[in-house]
Image (cartoon, rainbow, N blue to C red):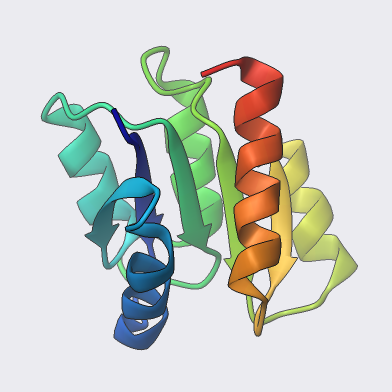
Length: 125
């Protein structure tokens, strides 16, 4: 059975690129913002890992991390953040609040794939 990957990004092109790349190995679910993703998770959907954008409407990446980590049911889901901002303070803030990794856009999907696999291996999903 394929592992399930949730991609949360308000840029449709990023979502489509990631869906295309990862759909061979993962069952991919796309959401366009943090609020939509949280609502979907709270409906009872299970996911193995999340890749989320830092800058999104309705609920930005930092608020998404905080809400995800504050919920016992979702606090252990591996989370990799993507951002167009290469600011050390953003990286540190995301990592401090519970992101497992942080990558800068533009990025190589193969590198993201390796990072996802590494996080999943560490938690033995």
